[in-house]
Image (cartoon, rainbow, N blue to C red; front, side, top):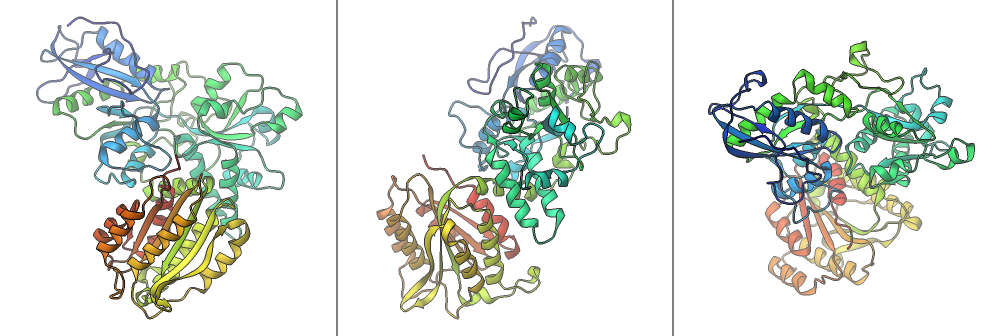
Length: 587
């Protein structure tokens, strides 16, 4: 097989059999070292598709090109490697659809998109999100980092100099104080549900708000979320365009003042010689870096899996670090190769800076980052930046009086009310929220009672907060079916265009109302009255171990939504946030 001219694809759409960009060779027993692979011409072909983060793809393509030029061959078998430069969010949508996961803010995969054999996204957080998003069995092979780029706070140099840059160290707590001050720093972010550097910055800022403690910690956290949301951009290019184009005071004051970006973003921006260069601030503690994990996706053929192992070895040779340097990227240990031009003040592990810890071997996922921390940040962001109309319904049957051992003896009722209150803090005044409670015969013969009618939070936030404080459990049973049908009709009657109209119902039991409708009647009535032009998303959150997940799934799916179960009631809050964040925006 003769060597051909390499062409790198610019995306993941279309047929996988695009022009080959490399030839790799495997043995029948697995794989061998890079230095051993030079050999005679080979025959046969196994196609290996590799989707790579856009900024890293040229380096991977160059390594594959050199491989082909050396005529690599083992056992006479050739491997054609197709490198596709692709945004991580696009591949994440494809992989999520294939493995049954749902990722907040990612959206649906294109109908023409295909899943690669190997995926090298910019961050291991994508792999974590897929696992927590419903693909629990998603277990890609390898996962080791092949490159890295620290996440920094990019700031126009004149503004950074006022803060003492580059001599003075700046921490996330100080940045948080400036974001939430009376004259706030104008901040921006690329949507953290769709951008790993944005997510890393969000995690660091949220951690700073939480670690500050005190009575204002929650307020500081929400304030930072709202400040970032006001300057959010869907695309990195759009965010970069918000930085000042002149150094006069008026332009600096009206332009973007700070944003979480990768070091590579700042280097590439400054390489274009802008009127106002960006300073890269390496805040302490260091945010999660972009770690570019090498993920062999599950389900590929054994021969392709062996080929993927060989390719990984090619991408971890010493010479590959120099190819990374040409793309303004560091090696996986945090050091850089020949030709790398770091921003002013950039730390390097080679220089003995302990704050510049290298990405853990095996990627961030292997380094112990808690998946729920990522999910909580993504969910909080989604809620804080969306608008909707929601009816919240809380079970007040007798079983809700049961104490929760993991919550210092608080009852299920108290834990649920607290979860709802924390969620309420994230909703801005553009939301409309209502509150019902239900049991059996709670209001005469009715199983439910309206506590606060659905209305704008701008005028009834305090009323809702007081109402959540005063909810008490009854001695009744669980009138689930009658309540849900009545709620659906209420939301349908008051449906509001342009917003996600939804019902969120908390319950710790099964339907126990002998005088009410049956499940069959409920499902039939929901099917009869459902209007595709006025969609209503129904979210049911089961509490404890007595609920029937099968029953809740059947009802929620029939109504148009989903069911979640918090076997440990202390996890209600996280599940509530995730459930709300996964709502589909109106068409």
